[in-house]
Image (cartoon, rainbow, N blue to C red; front, top):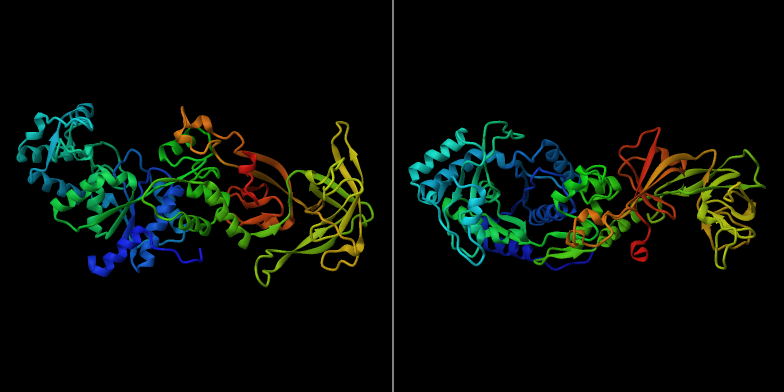
Length: 553
């Protein structure tokens, strides 16, 4: 956005810290994803915020993987996250992992045990939950809470050494079982998991909980501004408490509203269900809100950054209409996408007074929005063309400015034609239409004096390439599927994908590359799918030329 905007509340905090010289006038943020799935558009907001803050204030951002749950994390997700961050246009100062700190975190836990602030508990998870009480009733201590420091140290060392089974013991912080904040009622710090870790292998069988690992990891990296979403507000007292008791670098946590967007879901668990239950092809299915899915659909990094800029940084959760994201990609592609002609529902047009077998080379612009032009391409033209079936009507109504018997229209970049007749098959379907053309009406040098209101696109029959075209729409039929009764999957949109197996495209599109945006004239914005081959071209619709959803709804 070109216009000046006021500072958001996190920028105000940063500027106040810089003015005071807090942390030596330094800004170091971090983006800390758990590698248990693919990043989605909500993560893009956090990425843009963390990296954008650092860039604005001449700081840096670390990419730190929160890999403390070995049963759910995979290298595949690590690689995809790195690809997404780079694609969005950001570079991290250091690539780090919570697992880098396992030894240090263990030592921090030992230190808290020695201070009498942590204990080993043999209770089951159900017993611990019951002993925590309710929001209106305090928790009740068990016999393990009074274990001596020495006993706790021995038991915790035994946990680390693999003497106990999963769930047999946990390490808990000793805080306040009567706290109104349930998270302060002796939260878990470590649990036993005999599972192979994607980086540390079998070196560890105890793993720190998020609330213990996160703040200490921030402190070890000397993060100045640890930015989280609003659900972590109740976790902040615990974040501050551990840092204070361990007397380590005083990182501070700040919370902002997460991104919620209409007609999709943002929960990794729900996105995983869509993949594993085969409701979508994969994590990067172009209907998914994942960054990789949006990229495959043809969204640009610039459009996503612009979207994140427009929605801003708020202190209250709200629902953002997906039409804003679609507006941002339309705005970007209008300026950058090459114009090409593609016929998605073909019917043959024959120009009866144009020499049969003759080919003429016409010129078309790449993008008329580019000042001074950006070159163009040659378009072959002959007497047999494919046009859209919807551009012809047997009995056209008034103000139909395309083709019907007796009506005239301009062929894009070519000539004015007049429809003279048409032919049907045995089932009554129109198979061919017959036209005459006005030789003096050539685009760019029209001397015919004939004016027409309609322009239609076309592709030369002998020169056309074939392609499969996938028309993607919104994944869900309702604005907030997570907030509806029953299973969220009941609200999937059955029309979210419509496959056109045989469309005809300009020959120039045979050299299309994934990631390059094209405007199929009059039809929408498209990109080549990454799984296309030379033998089978596949184009994905990124977005229509206009917002048709509101009208359709």
